[in-house]
Every structure is written in C-alpha cells, then in structure tokens.
Length: 168
Image 1: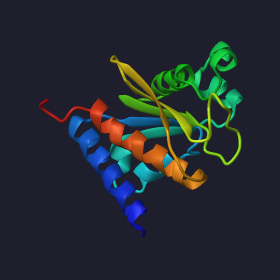
Image 2: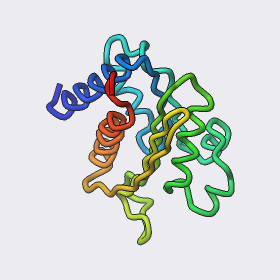
Image 3: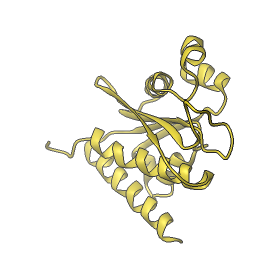
C-alpha cells in the first residue's frame, strides 16, 4: 500500500470513528470520483456501522433520477456547480438513513474543462440532516488521478468539520 493509500485509509478510519462515536450514518453522492469516496470508507472494517449508502451519479440523468437534482439547476449552472452539489447532498439524505452526506462533482480531466471551469475544478457539498448545507468550489492541480485523489481527501477531511465530537 502506498503512502497516499495509507493516508486515505487513516482519514477514512478517523471519519468512521467520529461517526460511530455520534451514532451517525454517512451517505455519499459522487460524480467525478466514481465511487472512490465510498470505496475509501468501506475499506475500513466495520464501516457498515456508520456508512449507509453511496450514489454514483455520473450522468445528469442519474443526478435527476436518483437524487432529485432539478433539470433547471443542471441547465442554468451545469453539473459542476454548487447549486447541483447542494441538491445532490440533500437528495442523498432524503434517499437514505444517513445523518450526514457529502456530494462532489467536478472536471477531473484531461479534457472537459473551459475558461470558466478549468480541469481540476471540483464542487463539494456537505449536508447534515436537520442542519446546514455547506458548499465550496476548489481547484486541484495534477492529472486525472491526482484531481480525483485530492477530491476524495478533501471530501473526507471536511466531513470531520460537519460531525462534532461526542460531547461537543
């Protein structure tokens, strides 16, 4: 196992420990990562205690059908937008037993970028049931694998900010 694989595994284990401590479940809604966030968390033994389900919604049709993303948001803002990932995260919560959901959509490359949304642009949303939805857009450098890896790492790291430690 490489150092980067170990780093993701350690981060996923930390996320799992925090979720288990709170008695919370996680759901994922992934586009550009193709299920990599779900794979990272399910690499941890016992993750069924804190991981409910993952949605891989690569196409716009899948985003609409599985997560309830509006055609209007997709038409007006595009799949790689904070509007769409917000709807993806809320849709993942609505279609699951999760307490927290993360959604990602981005342009991993090598093609598909534009002046407005260059390769490496990734939109994130984290939603807590009955609470806030936080969205952010980041840009990651590197090839397709690097962009996707950074996306998974950032998605997992920020889950920790959404799930307060027990007693907090």
